Amino acid sequence: MSERPASTAAVLDDDVDRPLTDDEMERGFTAMLARNARQVTGLSQAAFASRFGFQVATLRDWEQGRKVPDTAAQSYLRVIAKIPEAVAAALATRMPK
Image 1 (tube, rainbow, N blue to C red):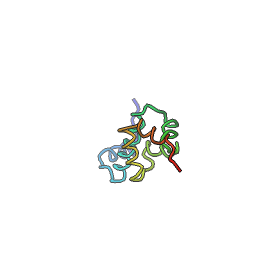
Image 2 (image 1 turned 90 degrees about the vertical axis):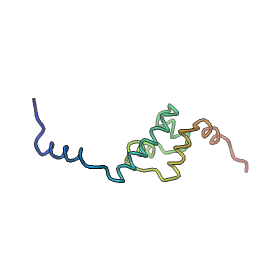
Image 3 (image 1 turned 30 degrees about the vertical axis):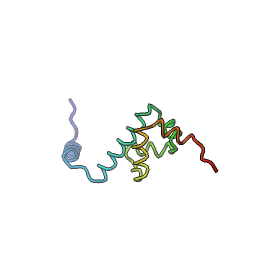
Image 4 (image 1 turned 60 degrees about the vertical axis):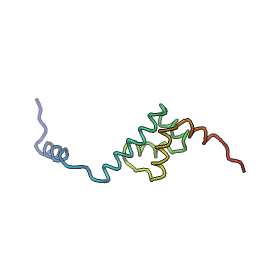
């Protein structure tokens, strides 16, 4: 059996026991929010981004917790998760000039 070097084991053990920072909690929560909204639709990242007006790279960053969507985008993701077809229909409707 191979064992981890003592320095690696110590770092991993310390990391497991430390509480998450506020930033880590927010990134985790919003990653879950973005993934959940997309999961409800059953769409790929590319299809979801196209249908709801996001950049694929932005959606990917949100889902992987690298970036946090602003408050408006978080609200939009919540609405999409609740009524995805209504949002898609509203976006497909052209506004009168």
